[in-house]
Length: 572
Image (cartoon, rainbow, N blue to C red; front, side, top):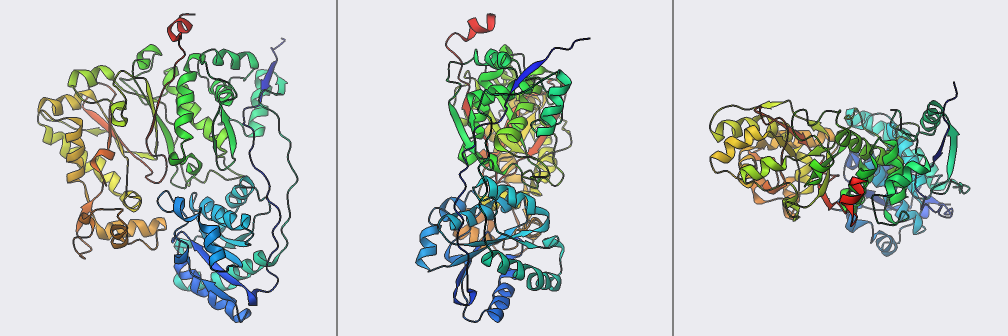
């Protein structure tokens, strides 16, 4: 039997990485002034005194500048301000080298690497403290930033599980020698890697051979793909008027160009239909927004993108928006959800070992795309999901956000709104409470509640709007400060302080009304941050909630741009 052969094209995007020149290291540490850069987590406050003590004993005359002079180098709140001015601050303090810490999670590790890279580009040598389990991720991030021989100083073991004495011993006996080595050794420069051009044929073979080749190259999600032949890609491009070479974004850690062409290629591979392309483009436009932080979807909590589609296109392309709405089975929901994860692998560059840019400790499976029930929204007189972001109800809109865990099915019963709302507070609010520390630290959180129209009908019957439901959940969902601080410490926020967050204007006075550690404070920062989507079986009294990561993947909405003759193209 002669099987057909497929000529398949490259699924990645052109790299924008330029290797930086090797920087001279420190020849005499006894004459050096060393700056500490920090994201104030993973017990860096306990390590720094030991580092200074040990280095001073070995190199009398060495000087140090504390991290407060440079600001927090990690996160949407601080990182945007600290890094752009870092070169000037280093020069102002006469810094000869930096020690950056601590990389011990899937987002703080890239953050400390990028901070050190800012210093390296400014001609200041660095040593970056990274826990053992994150060494490969740090090296991969360094390559993506233009330094293949990135200077990493290993801290052994699991930082948050060590006693104070064990942590001190590991700092003195293992970490400090590693820091000295990285600040004084020679750094090499990698040779340029030649990659295929977009549109190039990279392999020819049968269906099985193509799938095996793509698996070996780590270009798939582990499931069989549709071979991305040029004919199939061109069929997708027939559903947009935009230039295939248009760059939608360049996203860390691999810093590749995400183009209309590469979107089409990965759409083919994911099993999408050609007419889905306008939705796929809108998804990438959302995920390419700097404030979406797609680069950090390799975080240890294991967050996943969740795509929400709303507008007339839901019916036009046959999305499921009723029974079993979050199950695989309907092609539009399933393949588009798969595409979002494929994009993170191939264009963003989040993968498992050996690179380990995806550091989900356990992780969450792929989400299918969620579609809103526009009929139920109209019948109840509620606002649509897209109106939350300033779009009209009849516009076709894609919203993408991160989710990292779902609640149990929340069955609520009774003929009064309070009966349903109180149960939602108990289960949905209770689960969100376990992750409240992150949202409070960032000053924003965006949980998502999928509500059956059957439940929403009871609420609307009493005159409650979606905004009223948000307010009720906000007012009644609380957590004790004692639990909040414990959860923060367990994650690695070892310098968590509500008073400081309030002084910085990140949170309201409701969080600092007293010093009682058992006082209750709001779980949600803002009622309008609570997303509510009507979808699922209208004949059942069930809802399901999703916890959003709150540091990355903020809900981002984009209009789906259709070609002028969309209806005619669909008819053909």
